[in-house]
Amino acid sequence: MAGRVGAVPLGPGGVGKSTLGTALAAHLHWPLIDLDLVFCEQIDITGPLIARHGYERYRAQNLRLAERLLASASRPVIFVTSSGFLAAERQSSDYQSAKALIATGYAVTVLPSLDLEEATDIVVARQLTRGFGFVRASEEPKFRARFAIYQNEGDALLIGTAPASEMAAVLAHQLAIPGLD
Image (cartoon, rainbow, N blue to C red):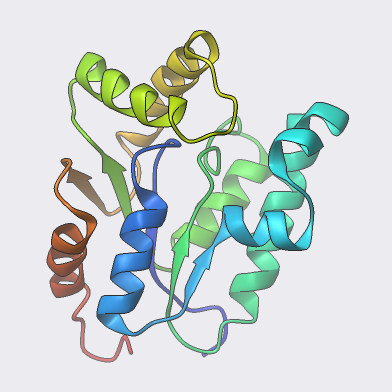
């Protein structure tokens, strides 16, 4: 069945969506679609594109790419979303389209902690070491805003800093739904 999503790791940047998605795809033997990686491979490097054309253009291109990739999926996939995938205004068509895409799978929000201060410390520290030129002054408010968005999204909430392989094993057990594969 085309367009079928198995699992969707959601959350702000730096929470471990890609790491979890990679481990989960290996555990389940499902294809992985990491939207950020595919975007950079097929369209442009995210930061420079946003600097040249603005965040709204990036969001629109990101969403169209996600729609195209998922429509061509011939079996369940692990679909790792970008950090701002659900960051559009809730009344917007972009938000509604993004919600519809993640609703086709088992959406799991990944956060290191439910305590905002602890989660902010963990994620900002991670982001500052990723080599993307992030700075604390912009990463802290961005994470705080996205934490508020994502903490109530998805079908499940995966909280913690355990190794991705351990979290993937737990999640794979949850995804062992007859007929899904």
